[in-house]
Image (cartoon, rainbow, N blue to C red):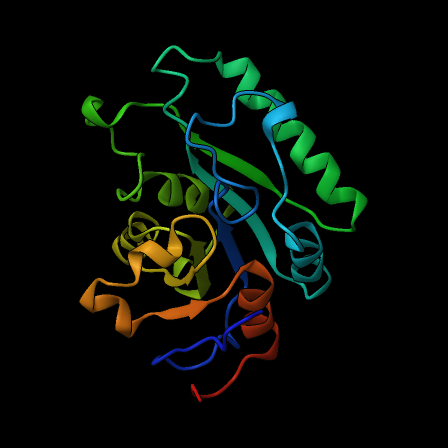
Length: 196
């Protein structure tokens, strides 16, 4: 059963672009990582929610940390194959993902792209001519939210994936929180003026 989304910020009427985290937002998290398409499982309603964003005129991108590559667990080609299949499946529902941006680095490598750093967002903005002030990041972890804030985006935290475990942090109270991607999309497309 869904719980009502809560927010202390104004509506999302000006949002043109949506950045989605992958694991825990689009598909189920796995403790041993998603290493093949056979291990990829869409969260209930996620593909349909992305299709609704596309029908609503939103540009959609995916930003994801995939350190499994530099950990030596899978090849870059294997991760890219998963993403091509994910995009094709979403297209079957009527959704469109313009690009998938991946950080392949381990946390100890000190890159500028691994969330909570904002490199993936800045790169996509530059490549696709995006105004980050009219974007939102939907993620299941504080690292997604921190990347959004650093890049000048807004953020929605979903309770799927790791999201529920993140809610004990004090400053999360100032965030928009939704049960899942479907409810986050409801917020974006309904564009409420204020929170209930």
